[in-house]
Length: 583
Image 1 (cartoon, one colour):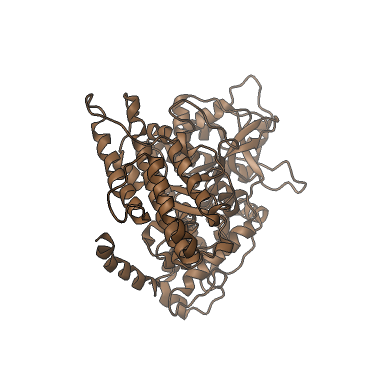
Image 2 (spheres, rainbow, N blue to C red):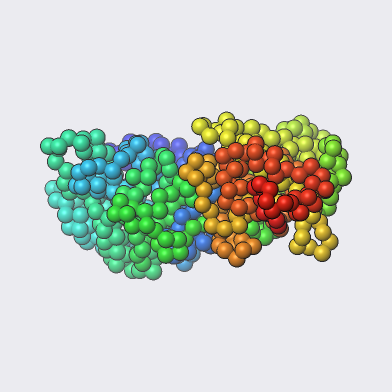
């Protein structure tokens, strides 16, 4: 009956997928807005996404990056469900069985989760997650196997299901379809998920019985059993793509509970977990086992990858992304990003000198224009880049203006520059409106940006023969970071919202391993900075403390007003209080 009831929706989805088009090239900047349209996702997804090979590696991966950087998109596009829907599931090309799961229903079933006092209640959320993942995996394997390995699947289906009934220690139903895959999947998706979610509401009732919930090893045993049952799965492990596993939505206690499973290392299953930022993931479990990067998991920060990777790769990715979008709008007057914005290779030293020459007034020079600037502004925040290009088009007059334009590029560089600056300013204003710490975060970023700009105007870089202006867009501690709890909380919020992006593998000038904190590239035009990665603001711990807790003091102490001021700072009296050391 469930299958019959779903026929209408399946037909509607098939019909919708036959002609997925866009009204504008800038529709669906977020993957969540695409819904279940696998064809539309295929048309908009680019396999040139940076970091793709690390995501597909045989290891547990924690994937972070700014909102809108493509975490959901790539996870969905690597799933077996997506590949099957788009007929890209050829066995010779399939190296693993990708199962996508988004944590929305986990949050709805276990909101504001706290570790229960009753030990027997610990496995309830783990049971919920296990039956959900197994149901999805079995369902999708069934579809794929019937298409490519129908004979083997039909011969072994009953033995598979019977073995799983035994493994789960469940009494199979008295039905002619007992050992059909659909019957087991229905039990997992229906009764067992509901049983766990409802039991969670009564865990504090002392006389409420709690029993027969899956421990972490059940899914490991089940996946090993499934792989061994079919020849076509022997060389294909399971990849579970767990999306939106982020604090505070998935609480620290709930993560610590589930991490007993998600951080387990096995040759049969690997977990790929997306979270908003490195500080949105609990690196421990309820047994207080702390997980170590490169041992239990690999950390991939897409925001940092786009900052530190070869800019040509970012540009190739964005060109492919926008080309797909332009082609999905019938008769759109633009087919490539280069045609729309032109090519203007960036010379950051020349840009810095132009700022020095025109610092008293807004320069007429188009410092932020061309497709290279759009690529340089990308910190993995693809959502914002799509909206940026959309803003350029709208500010210029929209589709009609592009159709009439005879300029090369279609949007003049001066207009691009204005739109870029306006978009960066709007983003800066959005920082101010963030809950709780928004005003402070805005003040911290403003202080850093203003100080970095004063360095660009009056300080000279010491590590190039031509003595270019000092171009800092990151903070580099002199030594391992030790700051107060208040300062750490502010720093965590800056990282949580990807206003700063942390490179944990930096090396200070004193030869110590220290984190570096990059300013999000989207904000660079707001402060008239360049995209150069050569220079840093190198700070002692107490200076970083001042920046985070007293940003106005930081700015007034550190901001340079002239070249003489910069020279005096280098010759300062060692007995005089100063936040910052000689460089």
